[in-house]
Length: 497
Figure (cartoon, rainbow, N blue to C red):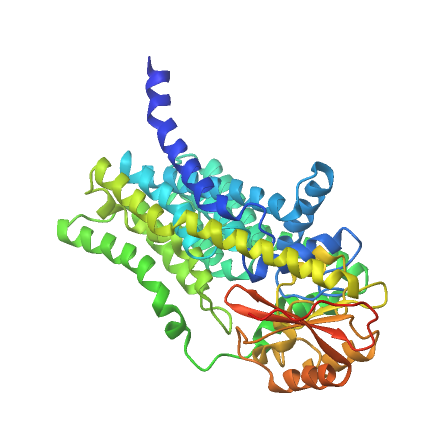
């Protein structure tokens, strides 16, 4: 029975990919602070449902599409009883499964069977390894870009000219949606657009026709961004939208070390995948197929996108994961099924799921304690102010927000000094002058290069009007809670780290 045979061929890769995706993400299900960034996205998504406008009322430079995802997951949470972190983590799991399945299907075009399955199963594992284990933006835009590649690869195998054009046009629209999650996909969009034009040229379209098609592709890619801008323009906030989305990133400072220096400790894994694949081809004197060349070009564009901004972080490498796995297919194809399963199991064990779960549970317990300590000291006119620490506690305490620059990094990081459209130190002073915070959270050591003037301004205010409430160990640092000296609430003695 052909149907049963076909079912037997695909069910086990699907099962393995789904199982690995859930396994690596499970430790963080329900964790409100799996890393720094998700806390901000979730906070903005929550306040969007309350009427706040990103860039205007709450500032960040990420595209609106990312915040819409988090607004959606907060809406789901409101109607299902799920916590908002679990809601976005489950949605990210679905994106992760989709990314793994599409990577598998792309790999099937070159190395069907166990090698393709391995590529798909390694996808969620390596994404998690590079920080996309919960709700990072890479967890959402990378599957979208894999989807665009799937469409273009399909177009490359389609003889029908109109169908090829339709598939490529749809891919450009998907690229446009991905742009509204993170603008660093622009390099990938450019490459896939050129690849699409080449495919259509091979299908017999004239140069004149291709010129018109290129304009059509550009329009399809820019439509989501225009749709995001229009409501701001109509509301009189076009300037805020344009500055946050397209200007501020170029005003951000650069760290003293080069981007390559920052990436070197982490780059070895995707680089090894790519180099092993290429060396395997050379050893076997195998001519790369057009499909492999398409994957290689896309991978190069993924790498180029990493260097678009002024700074770079290790978790950016998640964008390189599917390309690196597809490039590694020649060497994966030389390993047997048992070897691939052993290799996969080894990586899963090295990921240390029990250790990550323990770490997550310990962090959650600390966040609950922070919430309990802070709540009695804040109210309608006395907000919490997290100068350095987890922004999740704004939500957990139900605090009002003392500034639109609610992400701690924006006011304490020296690299952001010229990129916010305001003066960092002046904003710090404004926070304390206007309805002084009931509780201020600081940390014993920073995680980024600090603006010394901002630090001095906070210290001046704390010395003048605040006393220590408690010291709480959290994720390798100690958070210090400061309460106003005139606070009438009796507080426990500070806990030593």
